[in-house]
Image (cartoon, rainbow, N blue to C red; front, side, top):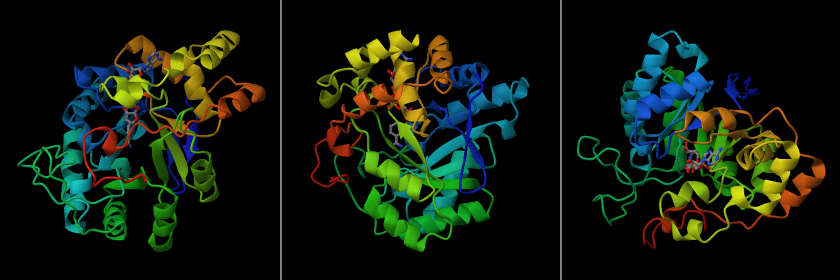
Length: 322
Ligand code: NAD
């Protein structure tokens, strides 16, 4: 399955369909290896997913067996909030690169636009949101400007080819564009028919920032985490709009959900551990959803966000999407 590339403002090309690595916990190295065999070239990892070493093992095995070359892969990782202070950025990036067994990231993102107090990786890794690993939230004084400057240094040092942002909204993006010497190549946000983010999509397009949609299946990825908000939402793959369309187009509802995003020019990064489903999810760029059906899906927006800290644990400190 040939996956189209998206041209980034950094000059590099990014596959439009990639593989998500969050919550890939069992047999992670095999899952990454199988995904490469299935045809995936982009892998979306992060310090916070706690599996970068195992992901690196899967990549190393595929390279060793000659299935793929390093330069054919597009490896994405993310900077966790406890490493936003400028002097913390390069050391943690080097550690993450070592875990992946590579010497550069194709794309490195600021995971969330908030800075938390440093936690020594020797004490706890990944550090998570809480300073004490349990309840306490402690801010760091690092601004996004300080952190972005350190991200730009990664590009200068050849540790990241492109840099980008995740979970930023309009106000932080406009601000960042004022001081960025290197503009963000991509913006990665939650985006599915229940959270369509139409204005953010337009903003990114107008500013030449490629947009990656995460959690394309809406509640499904969060039901795994037993999240109440996800369990009470109607599953998209079983929604009449998508089951009917899937039948009409001779595809699976999951493929239609991914195509809804790719047809808008967005990149997607679905996650699954099943090799048959991996292949199925890759096939989401070479068919079209008729315009009248795109309009029908547009009416499904509920502005329903699943991935926010306040949905995971009680806190009055992290209303970061308010
Ligand atoms: P997702 O939307 O990809 O859904 C995953 C769930 O859908 C799993 O339960 C999987 O078994 C199921 N599934 C996948 N393909 C299917 C198919 N064809 N048919 C039926 N079921 C199918 O979930 P996600 O993990 O939330 O998001 C994908 C990726 O996005 C993550 O792995 C991660 O890389 C990225 N992400 C980034 C952020 C961020 O803050 N930047 C946050 C969340 C996710």
